[in-house]
Length: 354
Image (cartoon, rainbow, N blue to C red; front, top):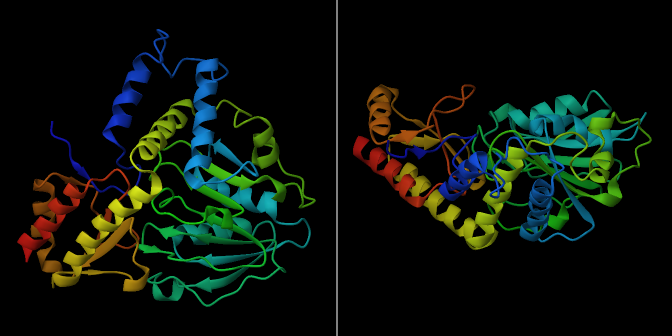
């Protein structure tokens, strides 16, 4: 069976080397005569995996020992609740959020159950077609929360505001895809299933000094400090996703790091957006200045061509191009592991339709 061109939004494409090494580890991990799936998470072999998986994050993001790296369960959706539990003051807590898409709205909903949430910037009324920019978040807030990339609507923050409080960012769909000063954030979280591994584990990067200041009782599993003390092993960690994430980040590091990945991602996005802009049969859902490098959401200008287009891209071996059910249209996710050649195949199909 030939390999498909996988534009899925997540779980998504990963480097072929990662698939190969992961498959080998399932059969026989480190020559132990045991599968990765059956060894103790307390064994020296897996502890070494966890240590490297945590260390490589700080190397790639260029962060120091004032930050801790955690691998947790529950997806980014659990972080919607863990963030306010750990950062919003008990009794009179207040946080600032931007509402830029479905997942940002879900984060707002969860935080609202623990304190006051003020939406300081929103594009909801325009169907999330742009990133709000003219807003402030002062010291009256316990923290400010934003979502760097919106997978459904195809928008991405190109810069981040200066705020007078803690900065929290959900980077689930674009972490490790572009260079930036990651030290401007006090807490970053990301579901692994986009750019850094399979589904089943969530990355949290947190500045240690911000914890333990809310006066709030935090249930054990929701307490970042407890997970830090237990080195991401408060409970049995998801060993396979952690291992595959480690392999993915090693592959990234060995192939030029984030800077090289950003250059490749910019080339892929330029190729696809260039075709959309010059082809009268296609258009994007969002404003040009906020277009995502990771998720290109677009639609036909003539729906009568849908059957022909769908037939053509499927015959070309393309997978995962359908848009999210809440928006429709199409979505091409250009994550780190997607080769430029796959984007060219899609562009050729679009050209042939015109």
